[in-house]
Image 1 (cartoon, helix red, strand yellow):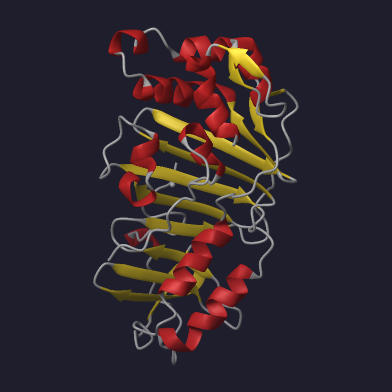
Image 2 (tube, rainbow, N blue to C red; image 1 turned 135 degrees about the vertical axis):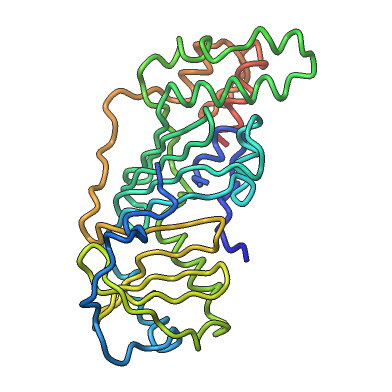
Length: 292
């Protein structure tokens, strides 16, 4: 069963990152390990999943902040389309920190030798410049029909322009957040198919938990009057939730460069903000697509 949320794709190439689109450990911050097992696990009538499902998601979605760590297959989130060298079955590491709704949050994704980091603060989004340069160069080479010309475009060319700055995209419209992950799973499980699952009572990291499993599906819920979702896995993809209401939100980077500044420095395409044409579209067309 595959239930991984798909990254929004309102923007192409490096700008698909605006959705943010999926290091995490496959087990997350609540690993199943023999050292975590205890004889004094809570006893009593643990609820079946249907009795705790709605409240667990509602309580989780009401939180202000959370840290999400997960492992997802690139193809499940269309990340293989963003990173041409990544196979759809290759797993990547996702981490989201900060505000649950993405208002002030940081997301990172890495698979193979490719990675990106996105920071969103007050509707403005920023991407780590060195990683952005690699993505942009990869897109240029993928789009170039002349393979010989493609070899002339390198991440070093773009990186020289960006330097150590963060690339700024104004007016972020679609930000991939912890809220997106939780809401997607809330909707997927709302049909009641798993409501009769019985809980295995356990203690993880000193916390009483209920674990619901069937085939590849595993759901870990904090036991108690205010249950929280701690981990969801479908076998191939895992999301672990930690630092509820304590996940640190990022601040806006100080050293930034805008898309138009990159366009002007590269010398081509059309200004994202002014619409004025400039000469050489080969480099800047891909950048402009990211700013649409």
